[in-house]
Image (cartoon, rainbow, N blue to C red; front, side, top):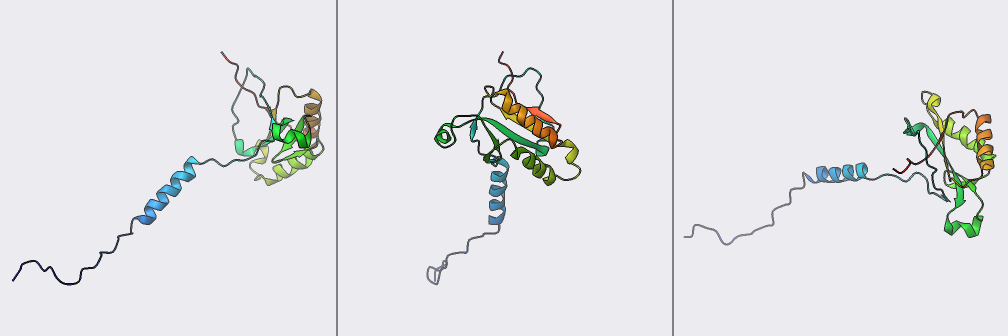
Length: 155
């Protein structure tokens, strides 16, 4: 008589999957933390001007961005090479800025409305007339807190 039973039915043991949800959750959490969501597809080319007294935005969530510059290379055949205003993901005329600001301010919570800021990201070759038109419309929309984007000077 043998001590070890070589005969009989052997089955494959079941795989323990109790830690699988923890592993998947960890991977999901990792990708959520590392990935940044694209907010706006830039349709204008802009080189920021150089500024000397620069500050970071305190509350970026309360900021609306207006991009002004020439259309990028692959859009120039469709829109020309004149300087254009970009609001979110579309080109707009200066008169449309008023409605854009009204909607953006309306989307904010009541406690955030006093911190509403408009950031102008403007190419340094843009004619001042376009910027003045936008600023006049911002004044009519009571968006009086305006910030200009700039780069630090090279040392």
